[in-house]
Length: 255
Length: 95
Image (cartoon, rainbow over all chains, first blue to last red; front, side, top):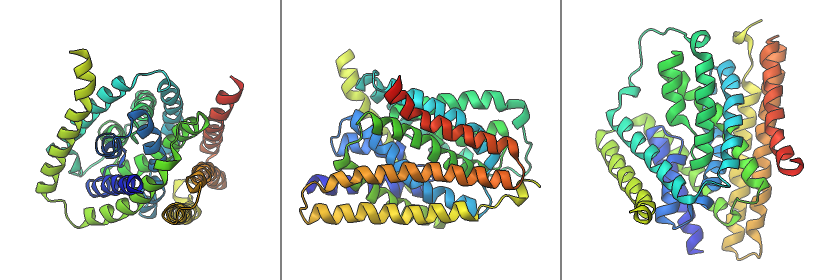
């Protein structure tokens, strides 16, 4: 019972923080489950990707309603990202847990700094559509993002949104909307692989999904009201602490 | 026919209903866990299957809408995506 409540709390915190700061939730979920709830990272990753699929139902809906999803781009990139996810989830069967922890540490540090800098949050005034020019490069990035996302249990929005915004040239809101829709498809591919290999822990998934769905909704609502700098700084510190804790054990083994 | 004619209402409705159903399903399992029902967590397996089925249904809806607005290339791409997703099952059992 106590464990179950702990999983709900982990999901709730990940959903709240993720929704509030415009992240998917996976980036917060895996470290929370690993560090706070003491779940093995190899168990936390499949749980996280499954929760991401459910979360994407409501997240992408908000953007679809406002017409902020580039459906053509989403379909093209989803194919490559799904292929990457299938590759990544199959790779995770052989990749050691220490490597997964170190990989996630790097992504956590990158996300913490990019969020604190906050440059991405400023919307451009004019847009130049570069999709015909860079689509091949973007499909390759989508594939690699898929591999990475499946390995560490994140959605991949942290790479997709800047790619769509900076390389393709879509408006930031469209980049976020497109990313949230295609993450739903790609995370589903990982979920399917992990499910078929019996790697999803059903005793954890219920609490986590309940927490992240409720937390994501509340966090998303709070995020539309205000995003004070103090929360960003607090999140930055939490992310760095989680990154340190994640990296500590594998590094201890190496040093 | 173009992107402007693409109808997202069905996709939005499906996602909305699916989200509530998923919440209700996992909420029910949580109640069962609190009530001490033996093997309640195993019901979560069906919840995961449901989530995957909804994802494929989303793709079918998108494919249908692309076909309706005569965006054949994207209709085919949606079908390819369904095949790629289903290939995970093939990879697991036949390779």
